Figure 1 (tube, rainbow, N blue to C red):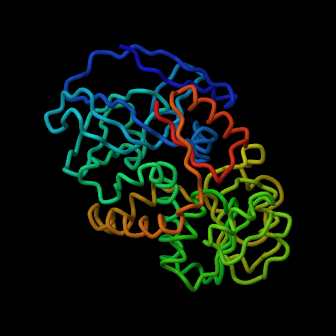
Figure 2: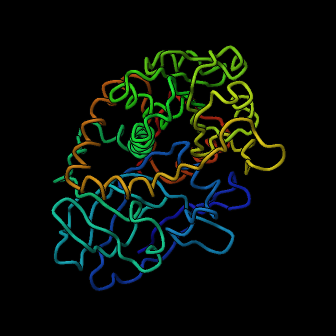
Figure 3: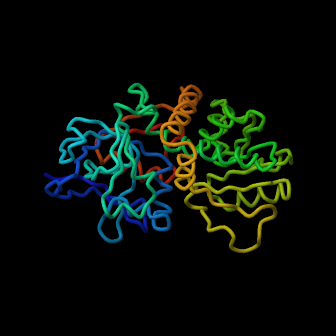
Amino acid sequence: MNAVQVHVRKAALTDAVLADVPLAELAEGAVRLRIESFSVTANNVTYAAVGDGFKYWDFFPAPEGLGIVPMWGHARVIESRCPEIAVGERVYGYLPMASHLDVVPGRVTPSGFLDTTGYRQPMSPVYNSYTRLAADPEHDPSHEAERMIFGPLFRTGFLIEYFLRGEGWFGAEQLVVTSASSKTAMGLASVARQSSPHIRRIGLTSKGNVGFVEASGLYDEVLAYDDIERLAVLRSVSVDFAGNADVLARIHRHFEDALSHSALVGATHIEARSTFGVGEPLPGPKPALFFAPDHAVAFFKAHGQEEGGRLVAAAWREFLKAADGTIKIERHKGLGAARDTFTAMVAGQIDPAKGIVIEP
């Protein structure tokens, strides 16, 4: 029996091929998952773009020079040598762009488990956790597509808002986000509206996406990047999802000392991503990287898995109401469609109003 994997050339992300890989005999204590569905979003492009620096390529091994892009989705147990996990169970979590995955469940509870496979242990436990859908507070069978499309990105937005609120929003009156059409930015805006309604939410986006972002109703004001200089100079926090050095520099120069905090998250504009901090210093605060897995560990340590899960699930349900109708879900069959969608996403050819689900 063979698995099918999508192998992406690390040095040229639009170069991807399908590969047949023999499945070995299942190891003692292991479970074999057949991947049922996953979404392809800008988040996956970020995983690939920063894959070496943040070890995203290390989750699912591939031949030298190639990588398997991680996805979020659903899978079913088709073979089990772990007495605590039954054949037929469905799980949600971090999956390869592939047809199958073998995991070694550890710390098994009614609600989930960790994959304890050796090569995955250096990476954050956030990515090694799988929820068992039968006891998952976030699972809603009627919204599985939305969870794959928005869920991981929403959780990052949730953690950003939790962090900023914990810091008293650094004394800011307004939140300015780039790439406001991105699902992470929309998640942040939704949670800020729920939990910090006194903070004004400003969305920056490309001219062509202004209408889409305004229609979401998640922002108090939406501007195209060309109009940054029209923003009111109030005490502000910026959260940069775009990774565009020029846009970030314009925000810093516009607000100067009125900018109380500058966070960097992701890199949706591949062609303009920057290491930042190189060359002339920006006015205002030094941009600080927000690495969601570290904040997730701290959040669940503070609240515990059960209470933390309840808080995320409650905010998620509110976000689903806000996000309803903002995207058109498209389903595509086969890993060839996954490859084509991913390479088109890298090239910036996917309409943000589309949410794409792949069923391998």
